[in-house]
Image 1 (tube, one colour):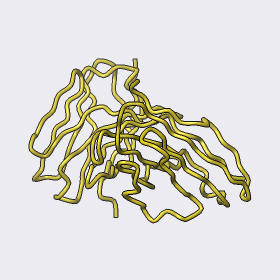
Image 2 (cartoon, one colour; image 1 turned 90 degrees about the vertical axis):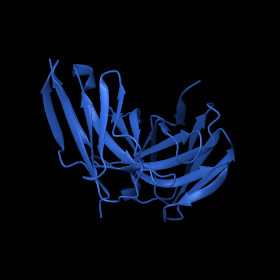
Image 3 (cartoon, rainbow over the protein chains, first blue to last red; image 1 turned 30 degrees about the vertical axis):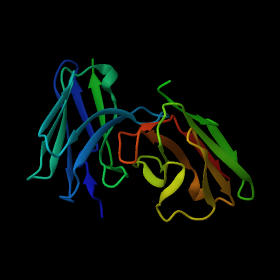
Image 4 (cartoon, each protein chain N blue to C red; image 1 turned 180 degrees about the vertical axis):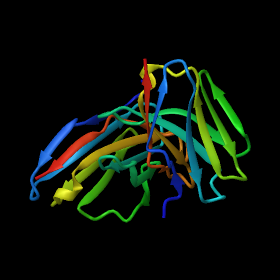
Length: 110
Length: 112
């Protein structure tokens, strides 16, 4: 049973526009979430995180929103750049583990 | 030094071979992790070490044997692997168990 789900396998946006990546989770006990970015043949790179005591966290072009009642989080990238093209994983962090979603491949077109 | 290093980058081994994967970090992190990632799938946790002691074993087959010789090093000993064990093996570390994890580049393992 998938506890963290990213239902969109891919997303394509134009350079300069906003990219919105979505993630849903099933366990209401999860209280810390992270987004990672992964290029082929590399390890995941940490982007941004959010604790369940907040509903928004911002770092430069990246903003993560958390809706606890809907068990939903989203990552906004604005403006999107071609170098943002990668696979994005959301993850929940219960008890020392990372439980990853399936990933969304973002393509930013010049 | 803010990176996690992994060696080798690529490894090809037969089913009767014994090999080891190595991971190193010098960030003073006290938790280290092994993940396995198959193509087009997310990373899956295998083991967690906290303060050099095995904290979590996600029911991994005994042909995978982790070792944490000191707080900077994490090894994964491989023996009698199967072709389905071919994957990208990722190491990560965090300040403490449950903290933000930083990943190495991975070892691409092929079992023939």
